Structures are given as structure tokens and as C-alpha cells.
Amino acid sequence: MTIPLLLPPQYWDKDFDARKKKKVEVIYEALSSDPIDVAALRRMAISEGGLLTDEIRCKVWPKLLNVNTSDPPPVSGKQDLRQVSKDYQQVLLDVRRSLRRFPPGMPDEQREGLQEELIDIILLILERNPQLHYYQGYHDIVVTFLLVLGKRLTTSLVEKLSTHHLRDFMDATMENTKHILNYLMPIIDQVNPELHDFMQSAEVGTIFALSWLITWFGHVLSDFRHVVRLYDFFLACHPLMPIYFAAVIVLYREQEVLDCDCDMASVHHLLSQIPQDLPYEMLISRAGDLFIQFPPSKLAVEAAAQQEAESTAASTFKDFELASAQQRPDMVLRQRFRGLLRPEARTKDVLTKPRTNHFVKLAVMGLTVALGAAALAVVKSALELAPKFQLQLFP
Image 1 (cartoon, rainbow, N blue to C red):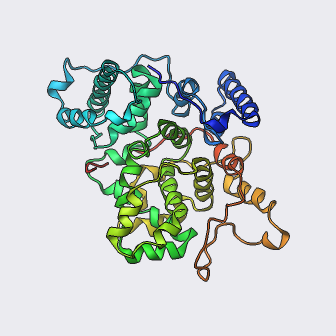
Image 2 (spheres, rainbow, N blue to C red):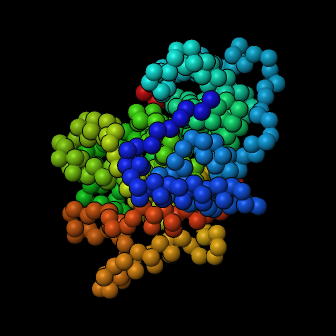
Image 3 (cartoon, one colour):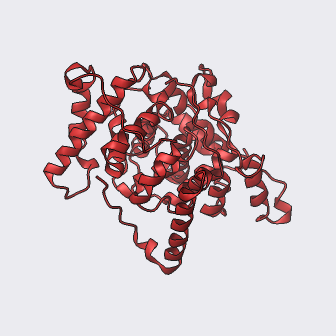
């Protein structure tokens, strides 16, 4: 079953209505081309407004994950997974606690039916992929797909997602998940050294962002529209993009953090309470720009700590490249951005951190959503990830 998505009020202004109509046309042209223009679909998923409706997501999300929707969904070779699965009791408890993830006003009978489907999907994926380990929070991702796609498509797409983007969270230990979290502070340090140093002095760590990362923000955002908008973005991008998005949330809240007492309890309490009224389109654009400027390969030494960066599957993800030319998109982004700068400013790196400035802001303030997205989105489909990754503890 697909839950209809209501667009926010600003989407109904005349200008956006025209842009929306044009965007829908581009999406359906990409879907009907032979072969399907996946690069164009990625551009549409990342750019302002994302994929707009759940009807479109049903058509595009499978293409972003390279899932053949004409194939029948996977089936279990066992009669009753609930009786034999070692994860059944934990999955059952988590699903029972997931009431707020369903649309307000949904009839109890319908919600309970979806919860039963949610359990079956999770257990089936785990049974078919014994190398994967369930973690608390996984159900928050699966339920998002279920509400948008229905059971049949969800089973196929989440199985693919679990062996690729989510693979690190589903390892037997938390080591690779902690390693991904280790990218958070280096990203912040590159943009705002003062904020980074303050957080380091407070010894707040990165655990406040754990639930953001492993649920793709599904557990912490109350508005379903915002959740699926982020899923559009993440599905079209590198597996580490959620940690870049986490970083831009922290950077956006810079003044709130600096106004805190410099101790772990105060800063952790502030950051763990994620605002619900974030400027999502602006933050998505900034996350994309930061990924281009500071790709994981540039942050690996600092982020690795005592763990080799090559141990994560995300490190094997192919570098982004333009679909129509052999150019790195970060170069294209810099060229476009420098075209907007005053001549005397063009020789400066866009996001390089000056240690002498105590209030360094994101230097992409002047970038439009489309500019950051354009450089990031023109990519080829690249999902050949080496399996490796996980997680368990989650409040």
C-alpha cells in the first residue's frame, strides 16, 4: 500500500508549480528512455523537492538501486520464520514500538497489518542473508520503504539496500559503524574549527548522531515528508552521505552549541534533540557540496583513528563522475562556483578552513540548491560494494 504524500504549502506557488511540472516530465522521460537514464533520475532525486510524490518514488527508487521490479520478490525456504529466527523476539518488540512511524489517523487494523508485513520482510531478508545481523533501528528504515512501496517492492529493495548502503551497520560488531561516525568530526573541523574544538573540549563524542545515521533519520524526524525527501537524497548518493548530512545539521546549529556549557552532558543533550523545522533543501545542498569538497578519501586518515579506512564497504564505492564527460564533479563544482565569485576571490578554495577565523561559516551560503545538486547528481549507477559491516545498541 502506498501512503499519499502531501506537498508542503510552498510547493503550490506558481513558480514552483511550473518547476514541478517540468521536473515530472524530465523524470518520466528518463524512465521511458532506452536504456533508462539513471543519471537523470539521480539528478532529480537530489535536486530541490526530490522525487515529489510516492507514486514517482515507486518507479524511481528501484532504478536508483538497480532492482528489477519485474522479478518476483524473494521467498523463504522455511515454513515459519517466526518460530526459527533468533531475531524474532527483538524484531517483534521493535515493531510494536513503532506506532509513531505510521501516519496519524491510520485505522488500527490497517496499521497492525502493516506491522505484520514489516516483521515478515525483516525476518525474510535476514534468513536469506545470514551474513547480515539485525540491529535496533533497522525497522525504522524498512517501515519507510513499506509505507511508500508496499510489501512486494520493499522486500526486494531493502534486501539490496541491506547488502550495500546499510551493510556496515549489519556486521556482527559495531566497529564499522563507529568508524563511519568517526567521519563526523573531521567534516566539522574542515568547515568550522572553532565548533570542532569546542565539541572536542566538551568530550561529547559522536554517539548523539548514532540514531540519525543507522535509521537514515527515520527514527528522529516526525514528519514523513522530510524522511522520504532525505531517502531520495541518500539513495542517489554515496553510502556515507548520511554522515555528511549529520555534519551539516551540527554546523547549522553552531551558535546553539557554542552557547552551551562546555561539558558532555549539555552538548549531548542539545544535539540529541534534533529540530523538526530544519531547512532541509538548504542542508541537502550543503551536504552535497561538502562531499564534493571533502570526499571520504581526503578525510580517511583523520577519521580512521585506529581503524583502517579500507575496512568499510563504503570505501570501495566508485568515485562520482559526470555521465557525459570524464571529469570529476568536484572540479566542475569549483569552476561553477568560482564563476559566481568576485575576481579577487576566485583563487581561494571554497571551503578551506582558516584557523584565524573563529566564526567560520559554510562558504557555500551563496550556492543554490540546484548548483550543489547538479555537480553531485550527474553520476553513474555504482553499487558494486564489497560486503562488510553493523550495530545493535540503540535507544
